[in-house]
Length: 88
Image (cartoon, rainbow, N blue to C red; front, top):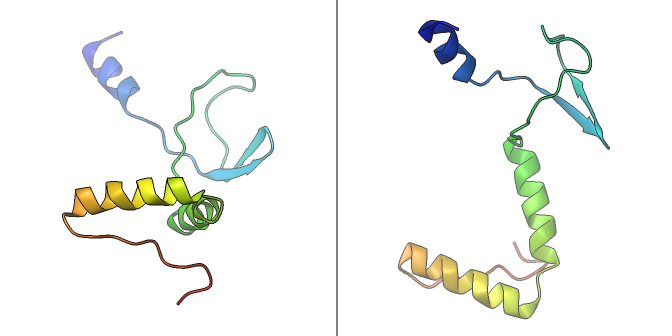
């Protein structure tokens, strides 16, 4: 491989699609042959990331909430409190 080909191969290929169990249906065809083995780095759409995070927050134990509040407070340099369930 030439240096140019190596640099081009290091750049990620961005594909979008939908996950259904263990199957990912891509929005467009790819140049890769069927059965080609890949490694995925998933980036959720912003609204999906928020929905999943909120679902995880709803299941946090009081100890996990306290730890999360302490971590965010330390990072922001000011007190942070989780919103109460059912709040605005």
